[in-house]
Length: 111
Length: 114
Image (cartoon, rainbow over all chains, first blue to last red; front, side, top):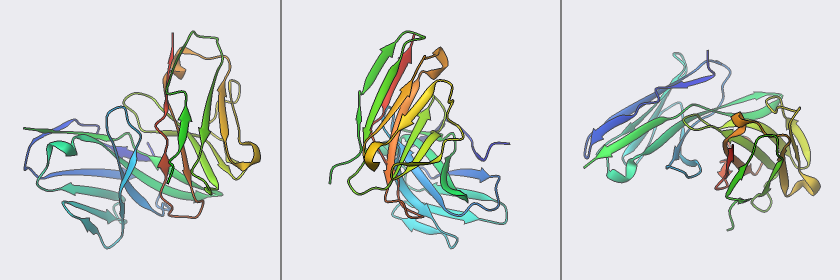
């Protein structure tokens, strides 16, 4: 089983739609959680951290369910500019501090 | 603030040749990472440095890959000899070093091995 699993997509949604991505992780000792965004042929950039209580940043909402070991990202009112790959990132401390990336979920927002 | 600098941006080589990538992290960032990202996959950690010491190289194919971070600043990643399956984007990232720190990525080096 992969340490971090995501549906690779692509998710094709019309502008204005709401879309949600899930990510599951295998190690219950995982400590911190993030969503990164990666545009085509670009480097990943931090979108938002994910907190146990859930957090929101404009149209983006992230949630964490430690009991079920999954993280979600909700995008409301999708824009064309939201088209990208969304990478789920989990951290572990096992001697060293490690960031583990999922495969990413591709989103295409259509006009 | 200057970001993470990487060079070259692109590299095309034939199998069995050697190649080297260079990274200059953000000033003051103690932790430096090299990731390999194969098309359609997420970044995979190759090696992690804390200052000039290696803290994790468990996924580095040591028979062909090597990396160093002299003086705890710049880093070089080398592949010798390259294989077809090494074709990927090689991303360098840095962070201040503390837990929960944001990773800053360079723009990467796209390697094609023919």
